[in-house]
Length: 169
Image (cartoon, rainbow, N blue to C red; front, side, top):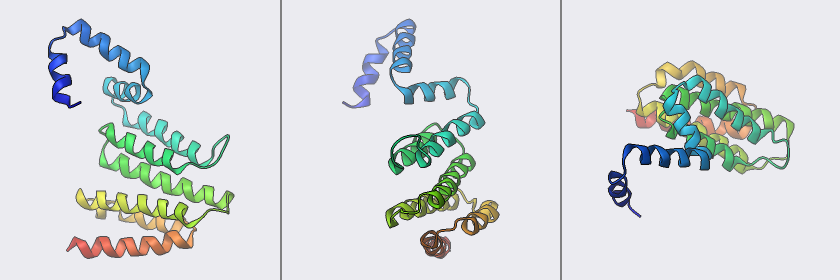
């Protein structure tokens, strides 16, 4: 269904009915709850802490295996909250650093694991390039590359950096 149809129905509701509907959305869906909590109290620091914990739980699960899809989902949901580019990139770098720490503990990880870290790195650099913030993050980028111990990630990051800076001109 297109939003135009939903919008038409919403226009027929009074203020109390809309508030009741939003209350139901809030109670019945975790993503809606987080979005509306952030809407009511737009504190990026609190939101960052919540989402960084979700990422940490992905890489260091109390039960089960590492599920990179949940980590990527956390990155996507954080961005959808309307957070700043700086905080989005900071969370992406946190994902990579935490993934690197997990790799030190769980040494039997395949290439797709490191490719996921590299992919997030590439997304972060593209975002910084789009927002013309590469220079502002240069020290953090170099620190991240040096901190990550994976040879696969370092090799991929060098290729990514070359492509980003070749396309800059």
